[in-house]
Image (cartoon, rainbow, N blue to C red; front, side, top):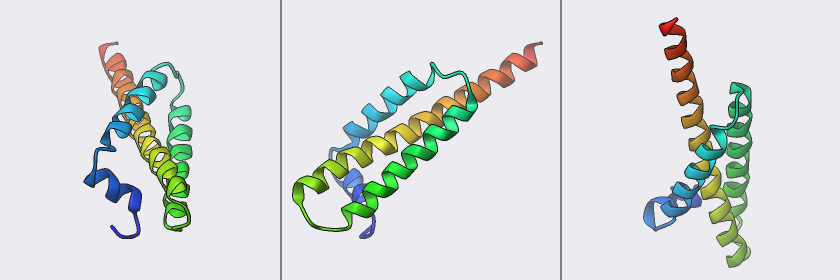
Length: 101
């Protein structure tokens, strides 16, 4: 885990709270989306934000910058997980709707 400081910090401290906040907000926002394509785009964009935060946090320049990157990266992971949950929920809902007709 030496190359993934955000994931390491996520498993070792209380930053899980920010992950849960990111999941809750993205599920709330994601359930309002009607298109599966938007879930995929949202997941890819948030994964890119997380990857950028992870890459920048490996450069040890400023403690405040690393702290901000930790919060933004953790919330981006939460958004990715939330969009995946919403996409699966919509997919199951679609299959259930089609099977009842």
